[in-house]
Length: 269
Length: 359
Image (cartoon, rainbow over the protein chains, first blue to last red):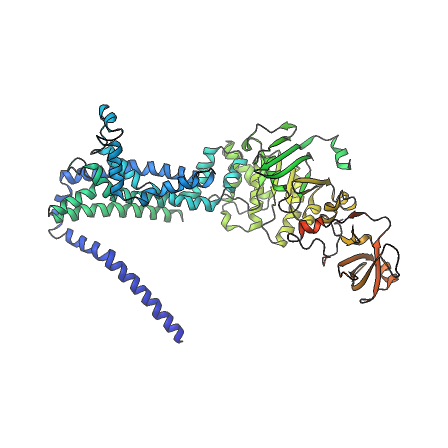
């Protein structure tokens, strides 16, 4: 019996430590932020989130997500296909390249984009002469976000694709299906949860990206400010309710994405 | 030329493989393979793993492109035809079931690709579900089926598109012995009903002999011999076929069948001295297990009851064995041992079941 009791003790102990860890790092800060948000009542929160700059920041963030997520989803699936289903000499290099955005600091990514597309950069002058401004403008922000959130879909899909193997696809082929038909009716349904999870991660990252966007956007209120930049600016200018209110919007968006995925999943089961 | 090849002159050619070679880098998987599969027949590709049998099957399906040579299906050169237009039914060892589709949708897949109308598709699929005895399971998912049911579903899926040939790659390899035997019998009956030219790959000689009209024995990328089970057993082309199809003893550098092994009570020139190990009476026939002196190599003979009674052998006593005068023998170069020692240790050993050919 002592072994049993000891087992129970260690089990509860382990749970306690895990919960404490979560509470200290995650629940407490988020909870306090939530309480702080409503310090001056719900009316103030509404005033804060309907400020033109705040609305503009939200719009810009959403535009970025709407462009970056589909792009990286298509790229991620294509990259996974190349890595898993094809064989060539420099596959290891492609594999490593996909991971690069994870390895490089977002600030460095921002700076690199300026070096290439900035006024003094490689293409900057040419683009400017065509009337296209990349840096300190929406295209630059989108590029930065696409870059930092690029690996997620590929990284989620690659193991799933390896796991399912090629038998089902080959079977579809022998039954007369063309490549696109095989992809749509066999491959995509088989990898759908990898893709979904990759999309959720990509969305979260695209919404929250701060470092790279700060560098390329110029952080101009009402123009090139995404929601995380707006939050940071409000915080720096001692508008804590404004900062917390905008954070709340960010949190709701992230939660919404997660919930949508879970609902889809439950519906299927 | 064997009887089957003679026959072929009069029947149309289901499948013909002409001088096919296949290389994977430095490895030659198929060497000058020539094969004719009669229309509507059932043919087995038999050989140890790595013998090229699966590669040959995949080449016929178009899943592998031959380095040189041609494949004809129904007299038509398949060189420029991709897999999806060859109209072959292919069944995989591990079923390759579409996991996210029901049994119905799995079987209907090829028909949907061909844009059949809904009612016709439903009729055909229902008919096939009954044919493969999965009635009532149309709405199940593959994960809710047993291995045998999954393989029958895969077979129905392959048959749905009315393929000109049916190719099965170790179709029962992933199933346990009992299910394998049932499914084998079932496949033979199904073939009697649908009559589609069928090739299946197997490494199990019993399976091949049981259901195939023509057996193609392969080794190291080459065809060693093609013929019926009886032909392979009675007139093996070489040492390999003799050892791979049926039981053999190695006597004084010669391979000889157990039923061609003669036991003599007294020393005779050309006979090998043995010690009787065990005498097993199996109803009308019997088996004598012996060890050669002094090498202690296992040898066994298959005798009739009256032969056993005449010889009146007892374990521990000495006797002498040699091939019967009219026996089929092949020189034993030891190549067989090298090829199968690790792979199939059962090949040279007597098995506990009555050996011989299914009648």
